[in-house]
Image (cartoon, rainbow, N blue to C red; front, side, top):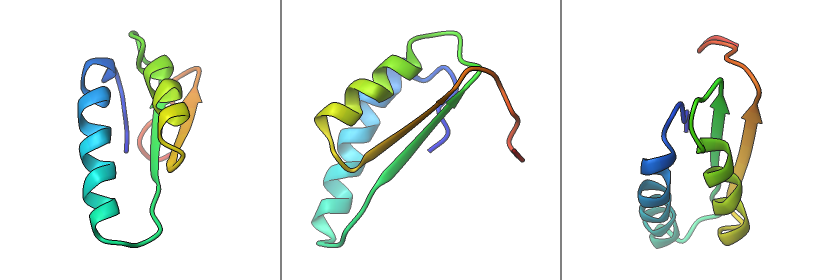
Length: 68
């Protein structure tokens, strides 16, 4: 899941995604990728990782572009 300046949305969207995936009764994970953000997206994704073990948070310090 790309997350560019999405701090305000991640805390709402990720729990809904986790719930939907868990209802499928399959092993799952959500990969949240942040790069070049200007808000607290990296911190929010890291906090979600602590709460939900199926979250993988990749936090890059700069924007690599969509094709990186």
